[in-house]
Image (cartoon, rainbow, N blue to C red):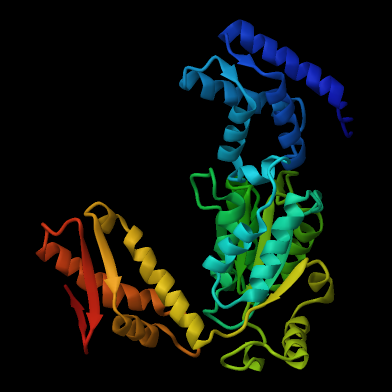
Amino acid sequence: VSIPKLQKTKIQKILEKFSGFVTQKHKIHIEESAVEMAYRLLNRYQPYESFPGKGIKFLGECVNDAQIDSRTEITVSDVLSRFIKNTGLPELFLRDDLPLDQSELYGFFNQRIIGQPLAVNKLCGLVKIFKAGLNNPNKPINTLLFAGPTGVGKTESAKALADYFFGKGQKKSPLIRIDMSEFQQPWQLYRFIGSGKEVGQLVKEVRERPFSVLLLDEIEKAHPSIFDVLLGILDEGMLVDAYGRVTNFRNTIIVMTSNLGASNLQPVGYVSTEREEHQYLSAIERHFRPEFINRIDGFVLFRSLTEEDIRKITNKELKALNQREGFVKRGLKLHFTPRIIQHINRIGFDQRYGARPLQRAIEQSIITPLASWLLENADAKNREIKLDFDGEVTIG
């Protein structure tokens, strides 16, 4: 028997009574606007839980925060702060009065995703839809299929999306990554979703992080029984097990990756013709059932990387080394000459694996010798370290 939902006015009266109790019992005043904000956020972003319970629970968390900080008032700002900690959602999404800075939006993804303008445009479009509140609340926020060769930025794009949407407050990474090549046999379905009292990997991860990007790597390798489960999730954003326990996916973005059809692309350069794109899409569609393809919101084609792309990625990764703790605490700044950048470009890129070997090349050719150098020069502090290459890596 379904329980009818309470009207908004009744919910507000209950929350007002709770606020009065908090004021009387704990001498902490909850502003009326803060209660209204809590209701609005919970109503939009957690529609699968019921009022008034979820409202009282959330306001109780705000009260605990106030007690810890020795505050006697809970404001809209306090409600936003607690909601950000719970969900990782940025304030941009939680406040209608904050406009979306499109140049900043595109700048964020262009900095993180090199050489994939189609992906950047798609992800920025997803952000715009969500900011405008036009996504379907009864499904996952979005479901995407990233297709293209290995090592061209599919995983990095999913990471960037997770950081933008859910990376502001959560202690755990907002990216859930599951290797679907581990679920190629029918009996492995139970390890994926669970059986009896045993909780599967998918269910466990999403229950722990309901606000997240769910990355299903190499989706084409999964057993057909897995796709039966995914159809329901893509359709309704819910998974109900044999015991009636519900796992909610409506605050996730589901990203699936595939290498299918990559051989149809030119080894380097843009997918420049409609014929090439059609060939690629046909390879994908031949593998998956039509009902599965029809439930995917967006398809993003990743091209192979050019030499210029690899150079940009190398520069980005080398620049990021300056943020590692060992350099920061010593006040050291790394400077890379063009020759060593060219060397890392050469050994960090492979036509078959794209930029995937880059991190390994940096660890072996840069970090390992730097670690030895730092141990030998323990007093090196507050200076610039120059790295060059002349047949071998030199540090000075």
